[in-house]
Amino acid sequence: MTMRHPGTTLLALALLLAACQSQTPAPSPTETNAPPTPTEEQVVMKAPEFEHQADFNGGDSPFSAPYGIDVSPDGQVYVFDTENQRVRVFDATMEPLFEWGEEGDGPGQFSSLGFGSLALDPQGNVFVVDNGNFRVQKFDPEGNFLLAFGKKGEGSGTFTRAIGIAIGPNGNVFVTDDAVPFVQVFDEDGNFLRQFGGYGGDPGQFRHATGITLDSEGRIYVSDYTNRRVQAFDNEGTFLREWTIGKGGSLPGTPEGLAVDMEGRLFITEYRAGQVEVTTPEGEGLAAFGSGWLQAPVDLAFGPDGALYVTDQKANKVFVFSEQ
Image (cartoon, rainbow, N blue to C red; front, top):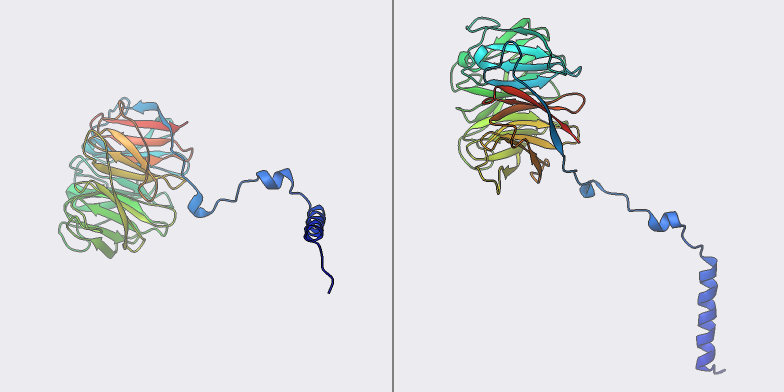
């Protein structure tokens, strides 16, 4: 048996290691400095910075308690001017275009009681909450009456104090009622489909449901005003999560209107605090703005250029904010 000296063995190992290293190409600078590809869980939503751009009182025919607002894909702004019992339509700069409505209980007439939202469907039809008449009215984009649905009551397909409305991706109509603790779902012709909710403070229940909106995936977000929270549901009304509004603020959280932007961020009007709060879909706070301008914001909607339009029930104005 041949015996090797320990120093000889160590020298051989060192030579072998050097040879292996010389055969392995060094990584390029691009490879060493390239950041890892982010996964969906790693994507962080940016905190928005919105600035006040303008505000409008209705011009020669001033608003009185404007509430519902929505914007068409071509930038026309629809406002439910509740105490004047009319829907007014403006261009993107808030120049008036046309209007319709008057007080009454006939087709195209309203009894708003000073509040109520509106929403546009993918075809541009306008659904308006007419809560004093216990119904929702549907109009074409020019304001021609198409149909109405609902009646007074607390059962399926009826209303007591309907307030919020949103249109889903498939055209279904979602309506909240701040006196009856359910979200009711109708088809585009006003036929009752289903409801979800119930009275209380547990997950999935409501004490005072107001604003409602849907995101691009069909998830439903509802302002639960008296419980001072926003709740999220899947498209069938199954509870997903909830979070408190106004944490750490000087006034109790009072969520009212809701809107989702193109990035999936949720914008919430805080009625008493006079501001708009922004959260992720999971409820993580991102920003708040509008304080000093807004007094009692109620509803809000995004224009095709990303401008945010907010109705203020106390200031009798529509405010416009843009992201910087």
